[in-house]
Length: 140
Image 1 (cartoon, rainbow, N blue to C red):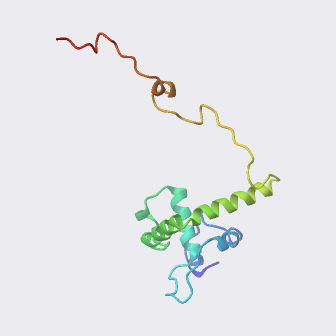
Image 2 (cartoon, helix red, strand yellow):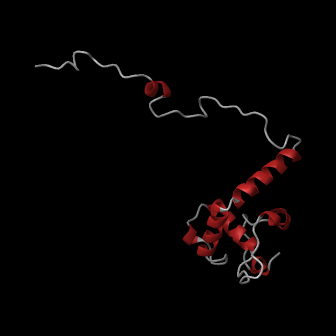
Image 3 (cartoon, rainbow, N blue to C red):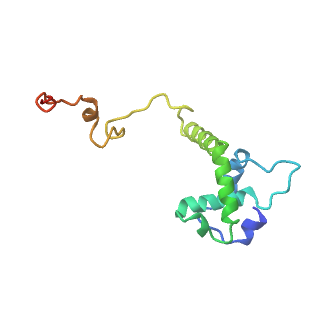
């Protein structure tokens, strides 16, 4: 566990050491040769999980986490570079395999309650409007 994580209060949203070891290879680490990272990736992830779990605003992130601007920077950068999608897809496949299913689903089911058309209803927008010939007649 990191020194920072040990020196602060633990939150229910924090990753366990086992969870972090599984997630660590999927999270981009600091680039070699650059300025050393001031905050550990585990603390960035824990801060993001805290925000998601509590629903608080970025600026209301507790002060024992890295500054909210740093956390927001990594959250946004990892969204842009596809890190969150890779994490989701990798863990989704692992969970499916762990419960004895195929890695990728072979079928999906959708019903009319799942797929919305429009507020008016699908058939309303598909029908041609009827025009009254009397209303459209040109009177001289």
